[in-house]
Length: 109
Image (cartoon, rainbow, N blue to C red; front, side, top):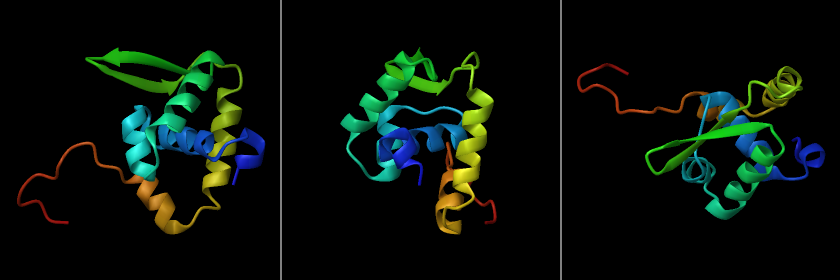
């Protein structure tokens, strides 16, 4: 939806994923969208160089998150949330219901 503004569908995907999950790494984002890792890594690196994202190393994994000092962070998040409101309900649920750990055994759905 914001591809024409951001110049890349993968850039929008990365930003939406990080907005929904708070942080993410390249392989996780690529697997979530079923795409190659290379374009996702390039977008993450470009946005980090531009100051939109920051990263930290956790073991051998490089986690990316929004840069809290980015001047237009609130406006960017508002734009992404507005765009998400036009996504299909299935896509919204898929973005917001990502599990980081397995469900406890015996817990009801």
